[in-house]
Image 1 (cartoon, rainbow, N blue to C red):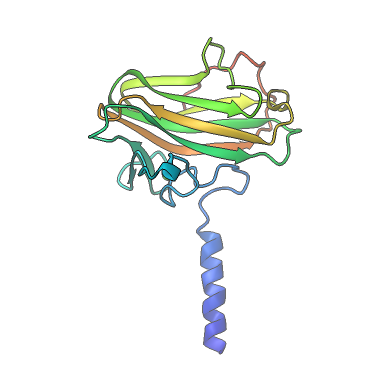
Image 2: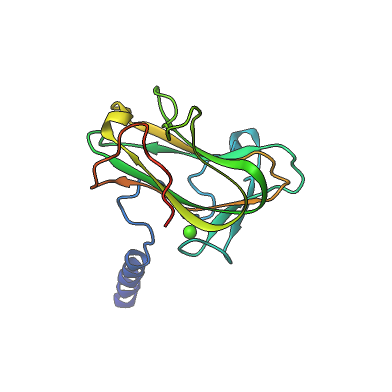
Length: 194
Ligand SMILES: [Ca+2]
């Protein structure tokens, strides 16, 4: 009995120490350390994830997701619905992307605020960033102010790859966290690589 209790305590401690995502990140499994758990990819239509978990190459942690389907000339998405409990504060959306041999502009990211369309990055469309070609891991961040949320408690982030048999889009470190820095005006944010 004594040993069993020790084992339980130790397991608990290891779990706490090993927690990889900070508790403030509202994105579940944004670093793909837990496979594709928490992510939406039309699995309700019986589709497999549009790519694979890569444990050999990541922006941070122990894994990333690589969007690619050799047999699919079309496009798909990886998405996640984010529950926002506190809509009175500003947030920071951030993620890291990597591309390998993609057609120019084939990879892009959108952030939908339920009932209020796409978060604007200052262009006409809803794309926060468009990528293609080959580029190493790069982090992007976009302030999302309380005003932009309009009090909605649900937002969804989408990562698109338009021609899955052409090149690979890597995704990692997807985060939506409270932002202590005041958000920029609604149409202003530019992608900032780090
Ligand atoms: Ca990761």
